[in-house]
Image (cartoon, rainbow, N blue to C red; front, side, top):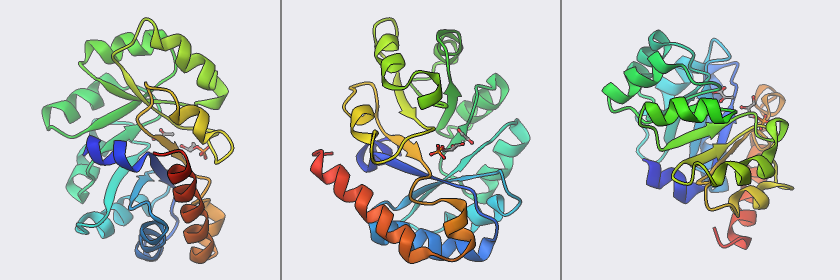
Length: 208
Ligand SMILES: O=C[C@H](O)COP(=O)(O)O
Ligand SMILES: CC(=O)C(=O)O
């Protein structure tokens, strides 16, 4: 699973309002070259959308904005293949580790990283990336935390993607720039496909 994420290099972060949009959305992402999504629990349709995509062998669906053990259980039951949260909740992380569910909690400081290390994590989300110092902050963390790998998310787009992916500590970036909620809500799946294909071309041009 981690290998798949490291190969794809971008995780589209999705807030979806209607479960009917899940399949066309996944199709657009896949055709564009990114058969993966972190579907957040920020909307009531998030959980059902995860379930709607979970049985597709050609698509990697994870859950985002998971704040509690209860929510982690729900997304695991729905078939999520990985769990993401904006911050580090030790109980949620431990539950995922016990269930061998890949989990990427958000960290935003060395103190958070100490907690992550204590829990035995090797890969964490770096959130909200741009707002907490972006590439400079990640470079500073590389010295004392050389073993940890990051998935920066928050404020990433085609314009700064390359700077993040150039860091050896970054395995992939998360972002919503190709799957903005208004595009999903108004059924602009062609636009999602086009922006995803542009992101894929950008990755190819970076040799990623
Ligand atoms: O809350 C933000 C999302 O996790 C992704 O961030 P973004 O919309 O800046 O790409
Ligand atoms: C932002 C983030 O990491 C999440 O919603 O899960």
